View 1 (cartoon, rainbow, N blue to C red):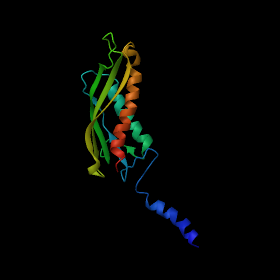
View 2 (cartoon, helix red, strand yellow):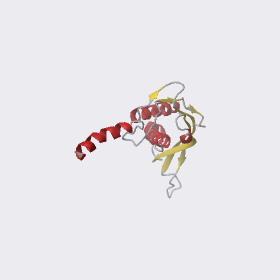
View 3 (cartoon, helix red, strand yellow):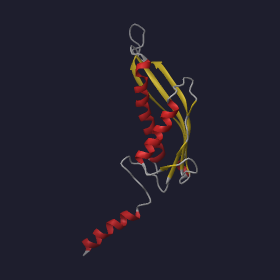
Length: 166
């Protein structure tokens, strides 16, 4: 008899926990239902013309594939806005000849996350990621791949900062 009570109690307990939504990413959106991602303007000194679109759309994709939030254009429960503040290439490892062996592309994005459901979880901070490539390689030939790699890392950082601490 006790086993039956336990077996039938488990679904009730699980249903009672339905207010918090978890998924395989470990993210929780609490009672939030909607999300707004504003366009990220590119304010870096060097401007990659695709970057604003890539950041904005990559963040939307990350949210849609890892949460149950619906994307809206206004009055959202959670809001992402920001700007691209850095996009630069710098030499890294110097060879004996004095020439750099590697160069590093660094992308920095300033993000303001507003959480109307749990305001204490909002933040405003910068996220920066880089990828290195051989100095003997033309930057133009590897730029798209580097940007794609950096975007994935940045989106993980931004997403985790917003949804992993609920």
